[in-house]
Length: 434
Image (cartoon, rainbow, N blue to C red; front, side, top):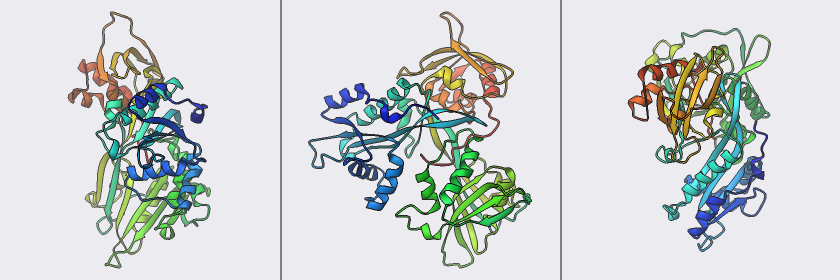
């Protein structure tokens, strides 16, 4: 985890000046101060949510005390104390290869009031986040997005993909393995901690994963204030033959008119081992009185489709999920392990300047990368945008495919060599929202 406390970092002066020129104020928000509830109101408006209750606000405050909350104000407005722009950021980790993490500047809660569009608010907020992160020494920034048309202009690009899965249990006869461990229901009391403990081990092995936090797990466990489905939450753990929790599934069941064909909605399914994965999926697919199982943020090609008699009983809808932005090319490329040697000269174009330049990338037989600037006059083998480099960093996207789309170019042999080297040992996946 990054040792830098984001709460100690100053506001970006460029953004402050740009917003002041537009008659707007750029300010930090203290989660324990009077500006906190108006900040929450602005975020709720931005994501079309309702006003939070006092209990809901206090529950969120437990998380947001450790976050860097930044707001934009129009002091001439009717609600001068309610921001017209918001952003929430923090220092966390990204798993880049199994067992290997690097620092990540995580960004969330980006909103602009619809009354204040096209006044440079988003440009100032996102630019400020990137300049702050780069100055603090972060090589990567990341976010999850609700709209796919916004963040590319700041150099973000999809790096991990996920599937929303729906399974017709009447067709999904189990043909997968039968592990030797056991399944047990566990109570909601202490469930959040139990989920977090399993996920923390899982995320360290899966490229693209980031740590969860207490507030996230309280929400999954159904113990957060305002959760109308909370009382319906059930949880089952898979324990191996030594009695260690190796996986957990948290779910609710939605009533349907057909009493024998309810919907089972998976809130989370985290499995540290193949046995845990198989046992938990078999449990939900063979659950009594369930006709459909739904699960979100699953692997791009979910292994469960290979574990049932009719693979077409499994519908997996793929979507981009986590977008990454490279701020320091040498450190970003050196943050992961690679699967094949590589020697290539790479030029990266970045209109914002953070990652613009050319580098020799040398990957040895041990999978470690050494990245150094290209000398003037040296030949360049491959060119790509910073967006393209962010997409291929974890290996979830092939550079040859991006070349076909016109956002990378180079000699076919060099592009193919990058694909071989960047191929991940495990498909990248982000299994939570942040």
